Image (cartoon, rainbow, N blue to C red):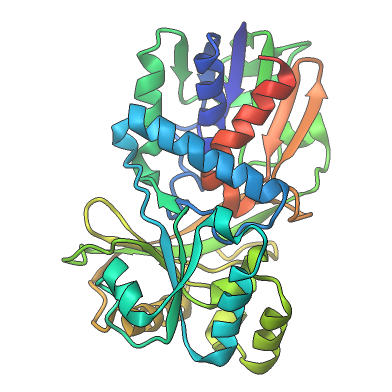
Length: 373
C-alpha cells in the first residue's frame, strides 16, 4: 500500500510512522521546509494527568505506551518518564487534589498526594512554600523542537519513506490523489490530510466548515536553570483547565478563590518542563476569539515568572525566547480528534487541541486501524 500524508507536524508524522511500521510506502508532503506550527511550539509533555476519563484517558495512556516504545528506538526524541507535580496551597486547592485521588481511574494515572518534603525528594528544585503536591507518575516528556526531525530520520532509514518539503497541496484530484503547487500529482491507496491549524483553503474546499476552532497561546523558554527540574510542574490553575479535576471541590475552588486577574483575563495556567539543554519551557495562555492578536503581551509572562519563582524559591533564569502559537481544537472538547472522510480514499485528521503532542501516536494508530492499513 502507498499512503500520502499531508502535513509534517506531529500528527502527520505519526500517521507516516504507523504506515511505515505496517510495511507500507509513504509520501509525506509539507508546505514548509519542516513543521513550524504547534508541533514545535509546545511543552513536549506527554500529559496524562489532566485528561478526561473514558476515550480521552484511554487514548492518552495508549499514546504514552507508544511514545515510550518509539523513544526506546529513537533516542533523539529525548523521551523521559519524568512524571509531574502540581503544588497546592490552602484548603480549597488541596481539596481538589484529594478529589482527584478519589477518582476510579486515579491508579491508572499514577496519582499520589505528597507532602512538601516528599515532593522535594522527587524534585529538589521546588524550594518554595506549598502545602502538598499532586504527583502523576504517568506523565512524560519529549523534545518538541527536534522530535519530528528525529522521527523523520528514522523513517528515512526504512527505505519506504519520501519527504517532500516546500510543497503546498492545493487540490484533491479524483480518488486517492492530491496535486501540489508545483503541479505534481501524488497518487496512493490512501491520502491523510493532517493540516493542523490550517483550516482554510484546501480543507474548507474538501470538508466545508468543520467543528474545529483555532486557539492561540503564548509561551517562553529560559536559559539553563543550572540544576535539574526532575519533573514537569503545573500550578493549581491547571485544575480549572483540565477536565480530570472536575468535582464539587473544583466548584468550591472556583467560587471561593478567584484566579489572579491576569491569569483570568488570559485564561492561564502554569505548565513547566525542563529541556535537555537545561532551559525551562513555561506557559501558557489561551485565546479563542478571532482575529488573533499579532503581537505577544508582557502581562502573562510577568504572571508566570511570579508563579514559577514562588515554587522554585529563586529567581527565574533569563528568558531567551518568547513565542505565540496556534493549534486546532474540536469545538466539542470532549472529542479527542476530528476524523472525517472527505473524498473517496481521502481522510482529514485534525483538531486534537492541546492533546496533539500527547495523543498523536494513538490517534494515528486508530486511523490506521479504521482504514485497514
